[in-house]
Image (tube, rainbow, N blue to C red; front, side, top):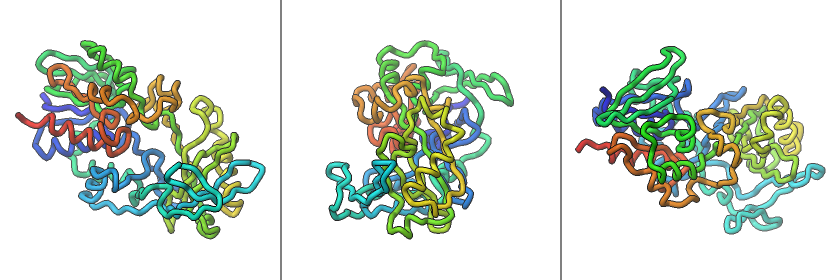
Length: 379
């Protein structure tokens, strides 16, 4: 019998696995997707650019856990280009204009002197995208303990251990037993998709229901380009598009000198995005041309709609479409309920949404893993 089973192969689950492996704990990790990383998703652009369609940045000043892990893993990283100016397109019938970002108000000002670094707050990107972090963690773990394509259907407390009922395309329905289980899925998704026996206490269920899943309603798009024409125009690729026909609400540089690219969050509501899917490349290219001219020469278009991702977005997340706000803005008492041991310490909830600090971000994923590492330490 396994000592610990981790459900979920995102950054939180991988970081916890790393700690358990170092302690020689008998563990295994099961991930529903055919890849590791969870909400981290990096794809290759036509010019070789590493395009992040999930988390893109980390902030060393406020996210010490991520910064330390990046340092420990020896991952190369670069500062997000940010001279404090934003290319504003607020009218589709007029050319964009340059504005200065005011960090005190979060507003764009015309004619004010720009403050370098104010827009992105010192954000940094990994060379090779955030997938580099996932790959580096996975490379330090024994592959036979990482089980991809295994969807958790039901979890059952058997008094002295826990039984997990999973399904995989290759093996069909299987049962795995462990003395302790850590589930790093978003709380709402766990509540909606997994049968739990016995039923969790009502206060815990309520806390899970009231915890939004970060990025679950969002879609992110990236466009690799032949050249960085925005640089030739004296810009750093930072733009806001605020008119009612916007396709990308904000734009930022997503590539490098050798493989330039632009990326941003899709402005279309989650309910409308599926019907625009076929035309989205044309819409993306058209909006970027309105910002930077037809000499932009886009090479393709890549996007991921997290609201349509069955292993990220719950029905409630999709219905709220971001109106519930960031999970870190909720009642701290709710998150404390998510951190309590269940079934006399045989079941634990993890993942970024359960963290007290950095909730929803990669920082929160690592903080949750750190908490669980201490909780699961041998007596």
